[in-house]
Image 1 (cartoon, protein in one colour):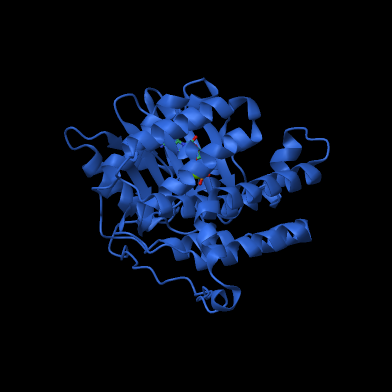
Image 2 (spheres, rainbow, N blue to C red):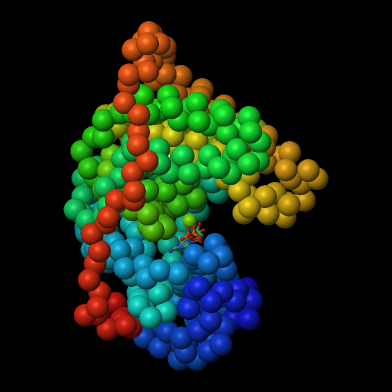
Length: 367
Ligand SMILES: Nc1ncnc2c1ncn2[C@@H]1O[C@H](COP(=O)(O)OP(=O)(O)O)[C@@H](O)[C@H]1O
Ligand SMILES: [Mg+2]
């Protein structure tokens, strides 16, 4: 466990400065921590953008999420879903919102206790992992909060296309493969199904087994869109475990099978496959990014650059492999007609409805 001086010094995240200089209890008086000992652990940090700190104080256990931009929408989501998740018979849960502070641009949310999907898979519980995730989707199909930006296939492609520059800079061959894949994805883009609540970055590690219910964390990029988008990202990140750690392939296969069994009839298969391929394309740039390189170096990789390129290549190959049934239709279309398919224009970021929080006090304890 770390003390407050181990919290990074990052002027873009005012909450970190307040915790470093005054300590968590003083920075968050609304939490009523009474100056007792507080243990902190930094569990996620993107310099200049956000940080997540695990905190234990007596019998209290929570996460402090610090941001460069006020996380108004994310806070509103925890508040709204906290009510939905605590309904009797609910099998899904998101962290409860405990406090928010507009000036410090932070949220305090409850800690959800339970193993994540990658943990279950590493522990030889692949089937359980797939079941836990499917349970989320079965209930998420009936959730629609009617707020948040529109998400869908176009958004998934825009996110994937963001990685082109870093892929091309690492290896021009990677950039060429990624662009070719993206062009095919544009031409096979599925129609978005009815809009539901979507998480937006439903990585395997964001899905937790809470015993009799499924917890989902890290809602920064949520919106309204097709469930296949979240399911595609979930399956791609789960499959990535097997691609990177071959000995876990059996457990991952069991997870995927249980997931598919548990979501039968809930998801459109063609759209799911398409979104899974788009998710692999999005994930492919991660190993060659700066943060990815640092992770590989930290793991003692002898040639981190070569390892990163090889990983990116594996993920791109997987995108092509997964999308094969969807792309097959495209091959049957004669070339001269194919060129007339519409292409996706780079649209400016959609303007999201913003929550007016000016009237709120800057610090608020949520009951
Ligand atoms: N409320 C929570 N309950 C349990 N674990 C959490 C919670 N919040 C964060 N974590 C842990 O911290 C990690 C990083 O937090 P996350 O919210 O995903 O931030 P980031 O934006 O850095 O991805 C998560 O993957 C998870 O292991
Ligand atoms: Mg996260």
